[in-house]
Image (cartoon, rainbow, N blue to C red):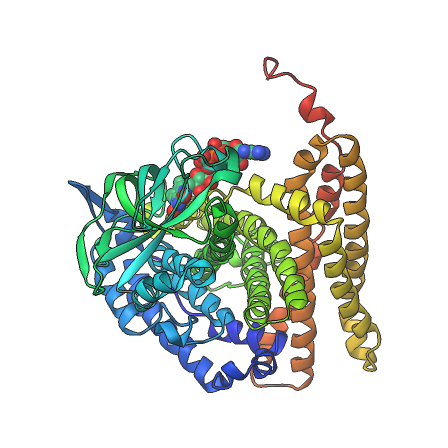
Length: 603
Ligand SMILES: Cc1cc2nc3c(=O)[nH]c(=O)nc-3n(C[C@H](O)[C@H](O)[C@H](O)COP(=O)(O)OP(=O)(O)OC[C@H]3O[C@@H](n4cnc5c(N)ncnc54)[C@H](O)[C@@H]3O)c2cc1C
């Protein structure tokens, strides 16, 4: 049975010590009420809800799954009540504008809420999670009528949202979309086509579902340049804002999945459904990127959630389960055998989970601060710079954190030995639930291509250079420090980080030169390059965490062991995980020849 305990001390360490968020919030007048007391209250209350309600539905939701009957989906027992309690608490609109009934907190705080509910029960969290993407798309690109009509209900949670991109013949290559949208005299469109794999596409939690749909208008150019974006409600909205009759949207079937069984994934058939164009025709894919960036960071969080939940389950098990004696002599002689936590290999699995959970959390919150900056920046040039940085980080967060999050969940299962494979412990569920994270919202391969192709090489390596400068600035600040003891303690982190950052820039250049001669170089290097970049960024965050923890240790606080654990985990990361960049550095530069020489027939 898995339990969830909100890691409030860890969350606050990153927020307050490492990222100094209160000075950051002070820069923005609209966050003047965002005080430490308020954030403490948010963390405590949301944590309570996650521990006492959502976590309790984690395993039962998986066992029961969603059910489809005559075109309607019902969610597992307890999901609806939990959703009602969540919306009553105003949690959906926590970080959405007050003018649409939101609470107006910074987006960075919204991400923490997402982490908490996602760790307690990922499947359940997908229902409100999909709404957040729909809201962000409408806020960014919707017209006044669309904002007024859909946003307050979405923000309150009375209605939920979806994202309808995938069709049977295409998921990655959205240029192949066939769903059609015919313009009508009244300015609306008639949408016809079939979408598959739609998360939260139908359920019994809300009275209406607002679908954001990609479709083609007549005469649109072929490929991705001819795609438009529509908002299509499940139930039509009357002029007086009341709910009208059912729209032409039906739920054809439900998918039977490997994991996230409490989250409904459905086939949606649009049959002359009334829809409204978002923005301009043929710019749909461009607009959809707003949705996708939000969603990609949301899925990156799934990696952290899985890692944290698996760690929380496997740590007490490792302290309790007895097996053989420690190689260095009995540790608990009064017992028949020592607990498995004495064995170095078990330690390695636990520490890997801890390093990934806490390092991943720091990476997400770091990105959250950038999202806050973006939301509050009105200067066009600065906005572009911030947006570029976020655009560069997003595929790394999504691709890297979901891959290492899955690895971490697997370690959690391994700590349990054969019992990890048995349902009742919940570990096999965490592994099954997490497997999807590297697939939806763009597979790992696609995130990696986006990173290396679009975000790095197409921009002449600018985002890497800028990020490397940030890291080198941090390393330089450390070298200027007057406290020699502190400087010595940090050397083991700063020195490899600095070398890796310089090499990152150099290796990017080398890939670019090779790609110039052979375009397959991009595809052959991309996933390794993305993982390589992820490990460097995680090292940067671990170095920051070690620095802050060392500063706190010097103050001899009551919870000094908490900070010592941070430094020791940073040491583990730098010694045991960070060196993976050496192998990745080699394979990413290897060139595509050994991949492309072999013919399909020989394969
Ligand atoms: C549980 C679940 C929930 C989902 N929720 C939603 C949702 O809410 N809305 C929605 O619209 N979709 C949703 N999806 C769809 C999901 O986003 C797609 O499955 C995913 O994007 C991959 O598309 P595909 O399955 O068509 O794979 P394909 O595009 O066929 O890809 C197959 C393989 O080929 C690789 N590949 C493809 N093209 C390239 C290339 N150019 N270079 C290198 N490798 C390539 C891919 O990485 C992958 O490994 C969901 C899917 C699942 C399983």
